[in-house]
Image (cartoon, rainbow, N blue to C red; front, top):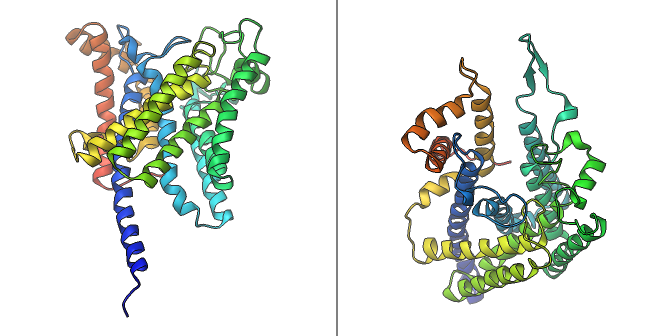
Length: 393
């Protein structure tokens, strides 16, 4: 029996969309891979000389390339969610909730255990004791990813797209207002006078927040996680737009216009609400997502429209196991900083100074150390990809 024309057309459309989705996942994998690659380099600079300034986070206000990395990962989480949400939309509510809550718990727990690692500390007499829970940081990079993922997944599941847009805008505006209302008058955006630190200290206590700054302040605090949810939502909306409009020059031009508008709006807002990663200001959200949309547009053009494969494999190796490779890089770095030579110098620092600073003195040697460490992590990612091992949380 011959099938009706509209059925044949629908089936052909579904087949075409499935191929397009796979190709877009390639662009997304490249985007995630670039993000992980830069994240490892920024997090593991060599010793003996400062790293180049654009690879170091801004001290407080302002923006560098290093400040773009973490929000880009959140953008990628949302972008990937726009593809996976199709499958989750068809499952029962209980299955959906169990999946997203399980993922939230595992990512949050992985981040918490990473900060607690190696769980034991040596005593002067050679004995080892467990690191006390009372000194362990609770919030962090993976913890923020977990909270933002869960929040965005629930919003997307239960609310319309128009409503999520309104909530995203309200989050950015409300966050601005909260910092003004509950910060020290005239010092709302300073490290010692902002509402973020005040809330973290009140809820968590100083012992459970980041302690390596001038004053106790957690750059991944509870309050500043609220605007970070919008990074995920904008990534999600960008993914939906790509799926609905397809890979055409017209859709890419519209994406790039949207990205430029976000950047311009952020720069205008910066005059009243300064761009700052540590505060994760609303202007910072718009600025980083605008840049992410522009970068993703270029990648879609390069990888999918022009079908250029130069360097794509290198980055997709990272992009296929992003969370696992990030964890591996952090734990390996901690181990190399813990293991010391007879002189008492950590292995990582000794290699950086004795090898790379001699070959390339100054910032170049610090960068070379980080690139070498990144390549060690890449080899692990390549081995996993070679054996088709993809660790999904």
